[in-house]
Length: 176
Image (cartoon, rainbow, N blue to C red; front, side, top):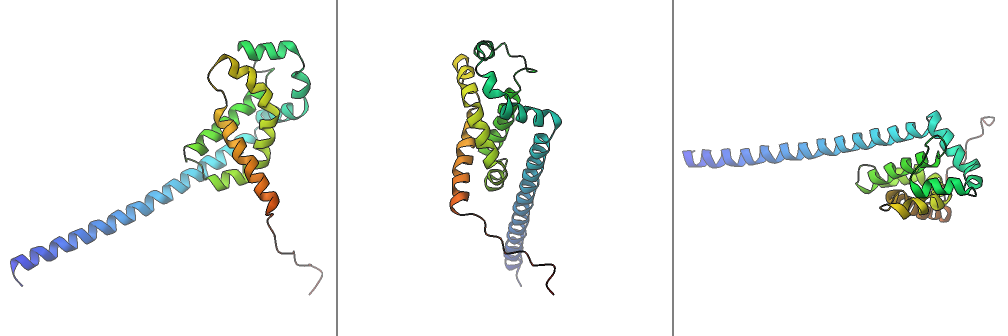
């Protein structure tokens, strides 16, 4: 074998090794991305279950409708003089805004996020849509990504109604 042939073979082997290494790196990056998405998802799910967030979600479900009839409550939204201990709906809107940003930027898996968030997000947007109007009247579009994910969630919920998940029947434990 001549030196030219040995050099050509070494070049081919080097190229092959670099290609395999690059492929392995891409696989590792994909796994890291998946791990990051899982971490982000579980962190968001845990945040939604904190006592403060549960209280804020309950406030939106139980009290917000009545509070929206109070002119002083609306005025605070318009002026930005918001007491966060009174306006618990802001916490809910900001939570969904965070989820929407992460989803829009690709930091959350779209299908998984919409599967766990669809019913609640769309419902919370309907509750807070009237809150967003006075807030948006004084600054840039607040909760833009909340509205984005709410629209996606609404579409996903409608899709799930049309094509419900069919689970196999549970086996009867009393049958042998």
